Length: 131
Image (tube, rainbow, N blue to C red):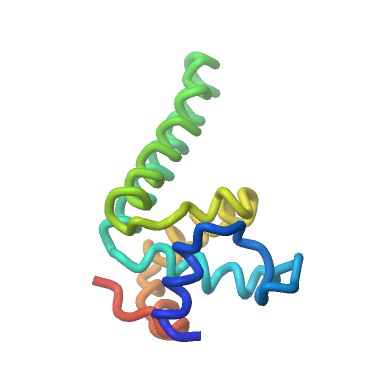
């Protein structure tokens, strides 16, 4: 699937289910490709990294200091990510269709970025270079 096709699917106004219009199931492999396409702009990815790292920090702070800090973790994580989707990418967050896969993919994308392997994955998915 090309970048243009993935970008069109990522910004589609209909529910993000199925690899074709008649399917009600999607493999994680197909989701991952769609997920990366929805994060094609490096600024969106940077906002995801920031939100994910801050959410993890609030989870740790909640465990160590005050349980109420747990409440800030999802707020912080989603705020940064959704800003990137709505303002920069102008597409729909993948968490709306597949929340658990999306959460897992946030961590996967961050791990690939931190290990300097995200550029290779983006090229493999025909999404382009990491900038």
